[in-house]
Image: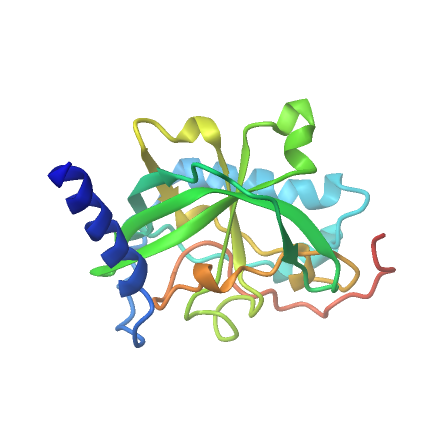
Length: 217
């Protein structure tokens, strides 16, 4: 019982401690990473493969990334939500989407203890091919300066979590479609997922002209 109480208070400390004042930026340790290069090549290709996507081939020169940052691959402790309740997550179009909180991730980055909630999109996980999909939206101190002001996303899977541990690779965080064009229903990262650190990894701010398209239904 004492050990459980100890863990509870440690996790509570993690949850509170990332809501303080702005900290110094984390140094960028850029080195070559072939696996990440392959991932990003596939990521860029999906734009030209998606007929409903926001970008064309000629727009890809305006998509930019931070170099691989080893310090932005962090090990996190996962605490499962025991009684997940459906809720409405707001989007930048004004539409709401149905999610449940799958759990909370506790980790340290830049010497600071932080936490992020991880979610399941109820419509997406109803599809057999995406039933293991997890959604991790967040904001950080690079928003509006180095990265998209509306925050960024990371895709994960239930199977990534082993023995309540998981690696969060911020090098794979990406922009929502709303960074490139109007007309998409992009979830707004909840306040609980606003990090008081700079995530100098992943996709940077799009530098091309923002497009206009008919709003999704």
